Length: 136
Image 1 (cartoon, rainbow, N blue to C red):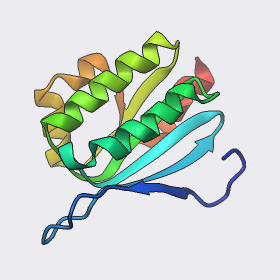
Image 2 (image 1 turned 90 degrees about the horizontal axis):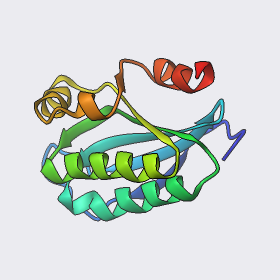
Image 3 (image 1 turned 135 degrees about the horizontal axis):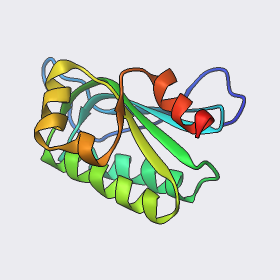
């Protein structure tokens, strides 16, 4: 992980591709000691197991800060909101921090309606989110 120049595709959900929608993909890289998970496609009930597996690995990993980059996520459903909140709680219990990176406007609206910014910090860029860990 550390020192990898090219991000590694960790997993792809088993969600069937719907017309005009991508299944979920997650890539991982470590930057300045922060684990960055880039989510693309649809984070839904159908892709929850993939996300749970990746976050479980992050919980057990050596990093203290996990950034979930949602810039390429095109859709979140209520299960995804629950997964983000549960991930934040589980990481906090281990003394770790979860941050999100901004996203497409429709995804941001869902996050705001669910009051996620009150629970999990959301940054406009990955660099800003990583800076939290470096500065803190």
